[in-house]
Every structure is written in structure tokens, then in C-alpha cells.
Length: 327
Image 1 (tube, rainbow, N blue to C red):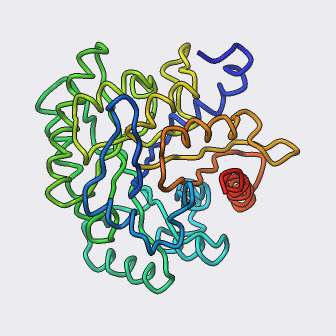
Image 2 (cartoon, rainbow, N blue to C red):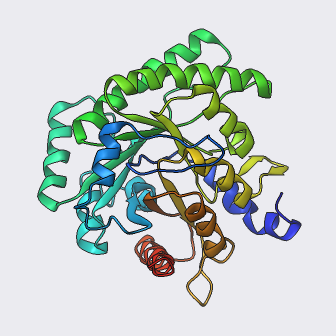
């Protein structure tokens, strides 16, 4: 568990984090950890391990999560179509992670998806994943409601396939006793993963509040689903289980990284040295590196002390400094 000081430092931002939903898709993870390592689908593995990859020796590549612009997007200052253009032109980032609400209910609109795909092709941007929220609880103990939630996610698998993504991020949410929700989540995720497998789309789960922010609980869910198309998206800043329970972030990442198909590098504020003030990135990435993760790490700025643009730039600089430690 976090120390009292760490808990107080993270409390406000952790509660803010629970009010939004997001996740990651990834084409990289060769992890091994006592036989629990997630194995990538062959199509994803082939694209990751080819000898011609210019970044084949790198620990990870950097992507940009759309949530980093949530204030501008909710404020009408930019749109989902603007996002990949800004990522590439302003920040030099050519991998992007979308968030479902910003599609404005156009996820089934073929012309809209074609326009977005054309924009990313013209910009030389890779569509990495879609973070999906608000489609029902995949861990709902009520079978009828759970099956409805599974079906509600199908359209996002279809949209991801159209856009050339390999992943959607979902939530293992549900209300009820811990073991009941775990059993339901294994069933709901298993059913959705079967649909994802048919379309060669990974289904990944973020620690995103409630039971899912308990690393041990979510790792048990992954073992229960037991599919190479189902994995995790460890998020550094999302380990508040309830108002009075916070799971240790480093233990949580350690629990989840064996199943990870992406990493969400959350930042809230920076110290004078350019590090995250409350998250030890050196310690965190040693855990990730030692677990043999090799893939995509997404910038997710969620602070208030800087503009969204400056927060993104500082997070990118921090991740680049981490990479230098492994070169």
C-alpha cells in the first residue's frame, strides 16, 4: 500500500481520474513472468518483431492518448479529426490513442471513419487503439445486462478494425461482491474477446477504479479469461480502489505488466528536474523493462498546473529521458 504521504499526494488527482474512462491497445509484449506472460496474436507479433523495424532495439515507442486534450475537446476548441494532425505536427508523435466519447456517436458512420483514416494516412500517423467508455459494465453480475454490455462494445471492435487499430481498451467494471464481479468480468471479457479474436482486435483492460484498480484482482481476471487477445493497460495514476483504499502503484504495475499490451504513462505535475513529482518513473520503468515489455507507451497528461500542450511536451521529454537510460 502507499504510505500516508503518498496517499494524500495522490488523493485529489486519483478521484479526478475516476471521473473519466480510457485505455490502450498495443502491438508489443513479449513478457514472461512465471508462465503468465500474455502472448500476442501472430499478426501483431509479426508487425512488432520484424528485423527491419527502425525501432527494434528500443524499449518502447511513444504514443499520445487523446485524453491529454480532454479540456480542449470538451470545450469545443478541437475535434477528434484534429487530434492526429496535432499529435504529429505539434509534438512529433506519430502513434495515437483515441477516446470513444470524442467520436460524438459517429463510430458507426462509414464516411466519418473513412475521413479519419484518410487524415491519419496523409499525416503518416498510426492508429493504435480506442479507449472505450460508457457502454455498460462487462463485469455486471446480472447476465442480461452483462451480455448487453458485451454487444454494445462490438461496434468499437468494428471501428478499430476499420481504422487499422489492433486494440480497444475496455473496463472490467461491475457492482457487487468482489468474487461475483470477478466471475462476471471473466465471462463478459471472454465473450467480447471471442468477438475481438474473430476480427483480430485485442481487448485490453485498464486499472480504472473499483476492483479493477486492485492489481491482484485484475491479474486474476486475466488468468481467468486466458486468451492471447485479452490483456491489460497498466495506468500509473489509477490505483484508487475506493475512497479509503489505494493499491500501491508499483505493485500494481508489477501485477499487471505480465499481461500488458500497452502502458499508460500518466502525469499530473512535474518537479524542477522534469520528473513526475509523485511517480518515480525510473522505478516504474525498471519494473516494466525487467518484465520484458517491449511496445508502445502512451502519454496521458491529466494535470492542472500547465496547459495541455506544455503537459504533453514535458511528459514526452520525461519518456525520452527514460529511453536514454536503456540505450
